[in-house]
Structures are given as C-alpha cells and as structure tokens.
Image (cartoon, rainbow, N blue to C red; front, side, top):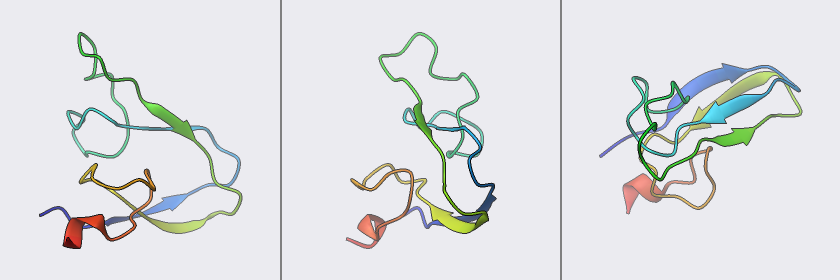
Length: 71
C-alpha cells in the first residue's frame, strides 16, 4: 500500500504528475512513460505550501491524495 508523500510546492509553477508509475519518485514525470500510452498530467497550485501527493495512482483527485490508498 502506497502512502501519501508530503511535498512542498511553489505557487504558479508548472509541475508534471507521473501517471505511468515508472518515475523514480512515483510523483513527478521524468520521461519514463516514453513508449507507453501514458502522458504526464500538468498541474500547478495557487498557494506555496506543503501538499500530500498520491503515489498509488488509485484516486480521482490526482495528483493529490484523497485517501484511496486506505480502501
């Protein structure tokens, strides 16, 4: 079971969430999706602070954890 990972994100910065699960940290795209049908999900936040991100890829609130890993 994957648990949420706390990450400090900067406001208005462009991030790319890994949707394939092959990146080293399981959160941010590093290009490992090449030769797959997956594409990273672009996102940003409005406020600089710590966020809990989802490495389990089981939630509908990606990239942020919504507790789906506990089910």
